[in-house]
Image (cartoon, rainbow, N blue to C red; front, side, top):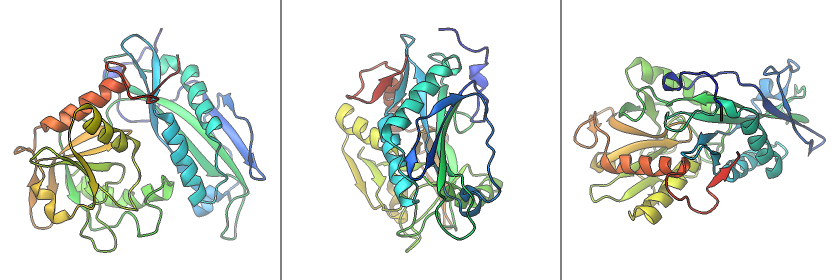
Length: 341
């Protein structure tokens, strides 16, 4: 399959316009059948619900070119379900799974030339989102909505690819108990922008957020879940009602247990025990896994794997195995990989 003339090796995680995107509209609680369009711009009333009360949510998933030149996407049904769960929490009429999956398939097919070739470490990132589109002034849900899905080729989320990053424990809170931390609402990410700016100004790539109630338990970063490895090679991930249920994290735990044979555990993780772990990583659709070499706390710097510049062996094994599944190099668990072309 012919590809666009792009230097795939230099791609970052930035917006690039592609040929087609998908749009569907909701009125009176009913979603219309969607369609592919060319125009990347949106025209809305100045009082649209998305502007006034942040009524918006989004998802993220990727399409890949496999070794045998097929184009596939990874577990899109889970993204459809997570968007449905987010819709319920934000009083948005639930987008039917069929529309979500049709949008994924149609946008990937229409932009197939933008799917990076096999072996480039790049992918086609898909961004589905919903916005409240009708005017509101009183605090209430919008009466109309727009669902869109666009795509763009991307490289590694963090510069340097799979190399350890440094993060810091934030003084700010990401999500409140019984709040919206467990859904993919745009407002959650707005909350992390200023703390992220602070972290970067101090030389750190990201923040570690603690639970807002006691500030003693690890939750997640602004855009990824944590995954830890104990010294006896157990895989541990934090468990909390205010953590986003990462599809990548859930997949990695299955890979670790059922394919690689490691013991896995989802539980509350206290900040004070983090220094006892051998390895640490951030996992999510955008980054897959970003190894963490150092975590800065108020009292000390915690260094993993004995050297903040090295990737831990189990983190590397998890990364390579999941990527191999996504690229079709090894057999995937049933229904994990959906072929588009």
